[in-house]
Image (cartoon, rainbow, N blue to C red; front, side, top):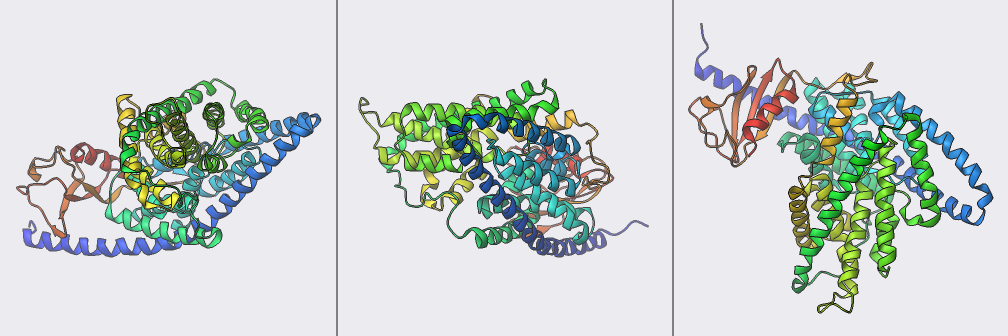
Length: 530
């Protein structure tokens, strides 16, 4: 005998009540995961920092003792071979790590937590000792995801918990890397999870705040980039944001294309030789322009002080872009977030220096060079990654000054427009597609845990202009095995019937079974995105 509608609605309400408790349970586990991630990322961050200092000192010593260059080159060859072997052993730990983490969360890819951690620390810290132009943020995101998966095996109750914990671990990793908890949570939504789920937001925020506490306890309360005392840009100078946004957009697009282009070119080189090439490039860069070594913190600090000439700025820009692309294309474990920020700071300083030339009818005061450097970082990052909200929040949190949010946001929008005009694709999405094409069987996943959830609940926002907005629920072409069980409209939840009209701004809660979460999200994206 069929169940009555009232009984069915009561069962759904009871299920949603249980789901709400699950949400807070996962958030509590996110705190535990965030603490573990914070400790590991702090260790990685310390190691990368000491590695860059060591590389800077060594290359300075080699300038004064050139007879030892041959010995250093031999050590670089051995290090390159070892890094290549590590990457071959665990391909999921190559490069940035952000695309692989996104693949685990949204596409059901697999990863072995402990081998990823081993390669990230052994390979990443070794590359840091030679000064490769790679950042700590991408590896920190994957370290966070791998740590959360390892702890999730003991804390999680099923795949739903595990998937949420992996996402929150990625957020905690970025938070600890930059002491930026809001950016970490937003990055998890905007780049990793690809939807604004309240459950994921709550879990990611709890993990990010916990890992940020651990990082601040170890490194202090001072912002990562100490730009808190720089001058504000007067409203009368806001028209300068147009050329700055155009310049950062062009450089961000160029950085995107250069990273992908050199990766394609390096794919024709034997895998064992790729890290050796990047380490060979590090030698002249370290001896001639030591500011280009490492992720770019020293370079950003140099831009903050200002006073550099056009020739030096142009040289730093070109060398940093090429050095970063070569380092990344080798597949060595390291990120591109911080190097892109460094390139953006140079671009901003370059625009400000050009604007301050006395021959111009309206010359820009040189005191605004540091302001342009801050704004330029956000614009370049947004154009290269197509993650504008994360770019804005990250710069505001890293600089420790919210007063620059308006010019930063304006520059980001202009740079993003340039990227769209140039038909630039989000770099992490392209990198994920390339990784999957090169590893169709998810190589090295023996014993790894799949994260493609076969049944569960997905929350998804209905955007303006989407197929679902303004339509009756009964006309929604949901695939078999998926059912919209509730609609969240503001602070009110209700169980819809076939005649219920879905409005833009609603959240639909979908129950799915006999299909993967990635398939469910793909179907919802078709219906709910504008």
